[in-house]
Image (cartoon, rainbow, N blue to C red; front, side, top):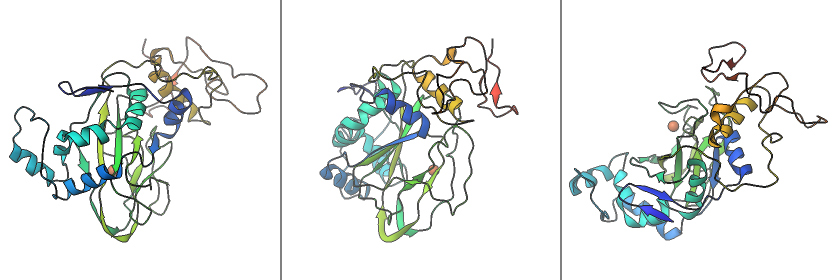
Length: 306
Ligand SMILES: [Fe+2]
């Protein structure tokens, strides 16, 4: 692990395989369960509850100790990003860092802002929503992370996500359930900021913390995660009609080949069926269309800029 405290970046070995990166492109999220030690989870809760003195490892320019004290008591307690124990065990957590490095390339930019989704349970579920300022596109210039510092069973209303909803505007009735991020203390959800999500319904009594922040890309994308020799971009599973083209575009962009991506439509690549007797036609075409990310065209294809 290489941590550059001045430029606020880290670098380490990527840990995700081709299959896992493609899974992230399809679902829009991945979960890491119980990877932060209990002592650190407890310390995080103590810090957020004001039961631990503030002890920044350095003071950023223009920020005073009083600013940090004030910040800690808001819904954006970013002062925690300056605690050395938090940096080492949560921000740069080994499992988390390896996954982030796989999706964001070398020298990952560390968060500068924290949101604390602090909930006095019980509470009804929130309505399904895409967060403010989300963008639908092939780029992965940043990913958002949820950190659950205490055990978060269904009774404490863990965040629910709608898999695959990061590629287009999606709505769901409040009565519909998604995939729950329930898990033990020290769990993370790495996800596209564009994914449809909500706070789940909670039925237990008590205070629930959930910290949310973004990690940032600082280098152009390239396929430098863990390559699998048997993984074949031509025959990989990208999803069904109306979806595969978006998922494949995201994967191509991550491989650093976003500019080369072209579609010819119909049953051509990246669409496929398990009942085919040969690979889909259309792979590697130099001319064709793009997915219609802006949704301004009835056939859902866009014309590349020449
Ligand atoms: Fe939200």
